[in-house]
Length: 427
Image (cartoon, rainbow, N blue to C red; front, side, top):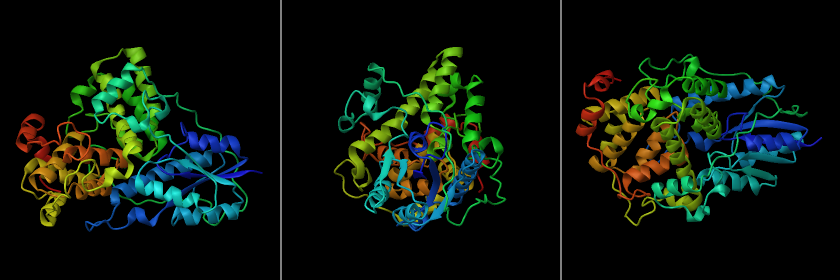
């Protein structure tokens, strides 16, 4: 019998998972695997771990849920610890697998992992599947992607590019013989309860990290009138309803962007389109843009100067530490940074403000801020995180050459009664 390994990466779902579907269609036995690479929890050059407690807990919830879905089909999830290029070939020999399927991720470290695996003697099929639009359907080749988002959006809309229909969840073939120790899977976790002030309370059932919770959230969201009000409310600072809250599930891959889009179009078909519902499409396009930017520029996006020719930025370690702790003395910035530390989440409006403050007011290295967000945010996405920090720092594709947000002005416009600042006046 043909056996394949499916290596789950940032695709922790069964529905609309082309790489997994290909494995299930081509093999009589499929072994689902997740690999915990040591590099994911290594120390950063800035003195903190790359993945903090909130990200770890949200990932754990997603893995537990994924295993439960697999078990329902007579399969399960095998978790390995080590470098993929070492443990996956050894596993393939042990179970007689003839190859590996996985998601393609166009970021330097993820590409290096995949390249090392491909040179380790196991055939690998990697599938691009995290974007809403298929790169092959764009009205230009990836290397000719416009360097300004508006030009990209206008070209896509003029060409009427639409995403492929999402795939149904495949039927998982049987579990292969010779499975190594570790089966049966035993879900693990802790008794942690996220702070009641959290805007994404991920320890509550409705915000659980798994695919089922993501799909239930989509159904609730699009059965309300909230999509019509999205544009007007998306800049809110706190609460579970001020934005769509898709991002944590999109980041882990528990939710496919194409599934979210299908729900959006069904909503518009029954409830009518509006500025609010259009803006959900607009934000999904921004997410795609940062992905396609990686296809065009790759490692250049990770240089100190980004896409420009600026010298490496300066850095003030003490100021950066105060920023991380929420002790800069700027009330709105500090409130936002405390919220991030306590809950692992922060509104998009505040992300732009605190990033601008770190780069423009504290004169710190944008890369340190990007890695702090990587460590803290439960919805950390390598593409969007890198793209947004470059944008704010003026080292990416912002036609204005960077963005500076005035904290006082932001407070007047978005927290006029000081409610958010009072809420997070303490950790």
